[in-house]
Length: 356
Ligand code: AMP
Image 1 (cartoon, rainbow, N blue to C red):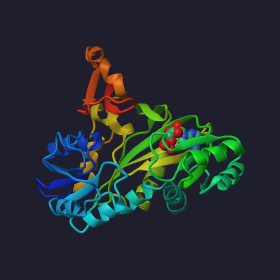
Image 2 (image 1 turned 90 degrees about the horizontal axis):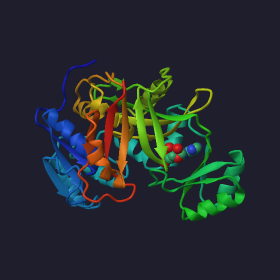
Image 3 (image 1 turned 60 degrees about the vertical axis):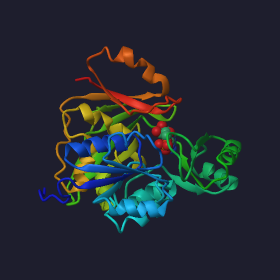
Image 4 (image 1 turned 90 degrees about the vertical axis):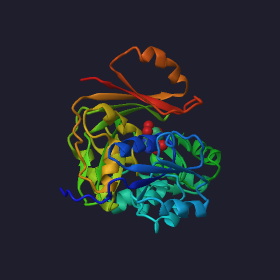
């Protein structure tokens, strides 16, 4: 482990994106004596409430992107759908971490799955590109009669995907996705969903939290618990292969399907801090937001061994109406995102509860 620091004291960390992840990254950066400068189009976004500066501009506003990049010491991002052209435009101004290749991979499910399986050598669900209804029909057959068709780009939390178990469903599903470029994946009868949140710093040191078990409701993460039962280290080893293959710097989340026999398939990766790592804030170790800041600042990575078992639950939409009742429980730690409007399904905050 190296101890030479890279970012000078008081340096400015630029963050593309103004959501809750940017907010929690800003809080962690401030604790380490750094300032954050948020680049996001919305006026009162969750991150800008805690950042040193906020450039309110569209991601396509290249003059604003250039000025932003010159005003910061390092650039990171808190969601993966920032246009790569924006990040490329910013990159001469300050180093971009995680590397642009990771962002580029994460924006297209076909590129991502090809990279993970072929370049990193880590297993994923079998998949085929689907560009029209006939491809979908053929893929369904190759995938054993049941598949999940997903748009290659801009899908998240189950949006842009359909399950098909007949030719008619495969064809209609592709049509319902707007005949956009898709992939079809084999339907995986998984035992459970697990993830690894890990990091690599600017010196190549790596660290990971123990295995996290995740429960989804309506395709959106509902609960995460860590440490999960039955952690044999395999998921961590696979996640580290991906970190190395990407020459990665920052926090990376890797989501897996665990099968009945214990084998693991990567579902997707996120080149950023991740909802399934929010429990780290109350586990008595370095939290994932500080871990990311440490990684991109070139600090040693800190402590990724939780001192408690913690369960995180998301508060979506009008779940926030339960805050008066929940706040009476002293065991619950609140992390609310400062969003005014509690739209249906919108991530408004999360709660952490120490369970052991
Ligand atoms: P994704 O947007 O790819 O993360 O998918 C959202 C959720 O849909 C996952 O967390 C799984 O619960 C389910 N899912 C996605 N792909 C598959 C698959 N190939 N087989 C079975 N379930 C899937």
